[in-house]
Length: 168
Ligand SMILES: O=C(O)C(=O)C[C@]1(C(=O)O)C=C[C@@H](O)C=C1
Figure 1 (tube, helix red, strand yellow):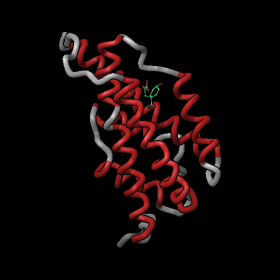
Figure 2 (cartoon, rainbow, N blue to C red; figure 1 turned 180 degrees about the vertical axis):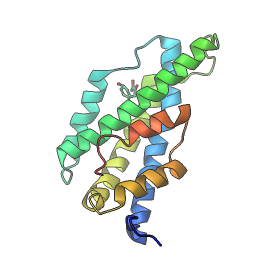
Figure 3 (spheres, helix red, strand yellow; figure 1 turned 180 degrees about the horizontal axis):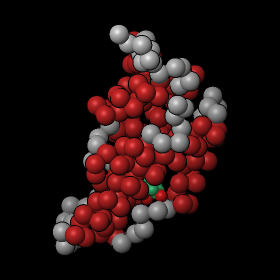
Figure 4 (cartoon, helix red, strand yellow; figure 1 turned 120 degrees about the vertical axis):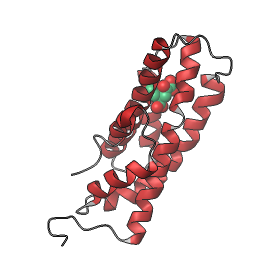
């Protein structure tokens, strides 16, 4: 039977998990655009002041969220983006990739997309936080993430996106 297996969440909680994972995937989908913009501009992948700006805005906006949880979650998303960017840059270096003709502009085209996702993520996090500690939830999220979050670079960015904010 199913002895030893954690219980699966109910339908409403499962749908909630899926909405958050879909947004995590949408945010991760922006990372290759960031990578292209920075490949052309030579800008550093790691931008701590930009991360701080987002984190401070998140904590200020998300009145219903535990700030420690909110910071851990968004830091994981930044780290996942950096894993994707660094992995792509390494690949492009190996391939002798030149400048892209079709790279977007980071400030004009790409960061506004991330900024639109931030409040959507906050809204889903507020709904997820109270159900995260349920038994079996971390295992369920890990399983669903393989379906809903892109697995580029052998799944490394996806792994990083789920690290540090999920309880076991
Ligand atoms: O905006 C950038 O420059 C990004 O690389 C994106 C991003 C993010 O995920 O928001 C990721 C890494 C940087 O340290 C800062 C922000």
